[in-house]
Image 1 (cartoon, one colour):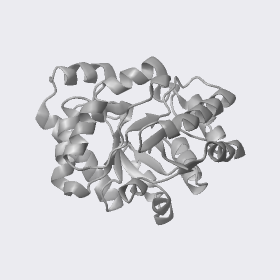
Image 2: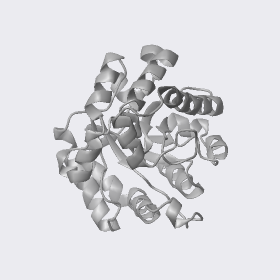
Image 3: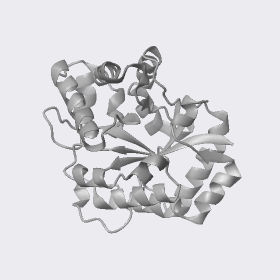
Image 4: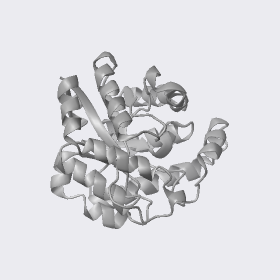
Length: 272
């Protein structure tokens, strides 16, 4: 069996997202979810992460520099440019990271099980350095595992761009600091698929998993219900509902069996 961490992004962004993610964890269809702790919804969402949920899935920090307001919030494009040319004020980058870790710890009483980035911003220059330094300062070599955004070549141009944001650099930092990190991230697509096409993408990702370097994470963005937020605040909500429909279906279990894939948490690889 090929072990894969099935990880859902954007927990705490909205009630519909939270409901979908929690339901899929309860069904055994997800083994990790990462949290937007700057969301106004976070205090309520954190209370829903019961001991049963936390025994079933890793709960991570979805490091945010683009979604919710703080002293260094930017559009993704502006953040990429400023970080690439090292124009971000280092002290503010550090404070934004510290604040999010503090909020996570205060709500749940533990460090995050893992860290990734909203729109993969954790891999950007300046941000990755400050993040890895802060994780080491707080947790030493017993810190969270790091989700590296390195999609396979089959994920096309979008996957290549995501990888180029700094996958190799943050991986080297993680190795240097003795932090477990994933080697492959599957799940990149244009958020424009029907349920049948998304199911086929899942089958393709799982089919190639045995030939890709691991640990492997498969990223998803599910939600269920009718969105109560402005469509401009969540332009991929239709795709979220499609993903939930597929992941909650009996066909998804069949895909896992056919591909001989087992869904695991990050500690599976720590003990391997």
